[in-house]
Amino acid sequence: MSVRFTTRARTGAVALVVAAGLALGVVGCGGGGDSEDGKPKASASASASRGDDPNPSTQEGSDEILAELRGEGGLILKITSATRDAGGFVTVNGELKNDSSEPARVSLRAAGVETEILRHGPSLGGATLVDSASKKRYYVLRDTDGRPLTTTNMPRLKAGESIPVFMQFPAPPAETSEVSFQLPSFASGTIQISG
Picture 1: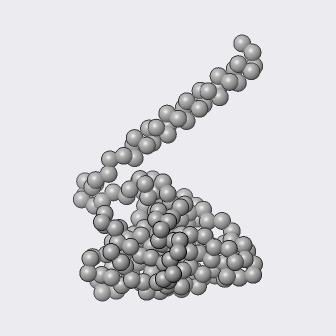
Picture 2: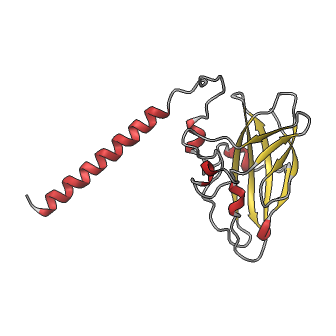
Picture 3: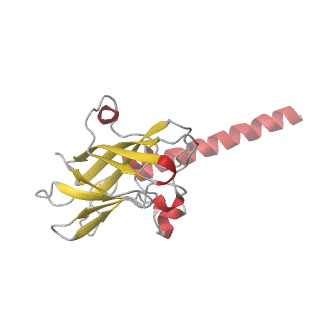
């Protein structure tokens, strides 16, 4: 056998193994429903889009700003929507903008302090919703691998640059419509939940 044939055979075998692994991953993520303890499972579609906005229509053309939170290094987080989903989740959408004249990066503290979230890299996993009336705090949801259901791997932002961001939380009770949004290294603010 020639070297060229051996290289092609190895490349084909690697491609077959990767394709089989991806197919098993997709099959393994299916199902849905509730877990044994009755709590809803995190959806695979939300974790697959953790770097993208799950609902682009809430980002583009949105004039309303629920809260504008200033962070370190000239960063501003504008929250444009907080929507209650039928599945028992609240999805918070917004825009992260570098309002300074220098490049800036989101602080590593924004990922929080939980080891499970930190091992998946930079994120907004430290965000929480606080329901003062019920005296409860809601943390960012995680998928079955422990990845936070939020924007991850945010790039260094050039001066004036902005990116869309999202975070998904368990929903507070239906009668709760106002919560405090908190993210480490940013000021906190009050937002209204719709839906």
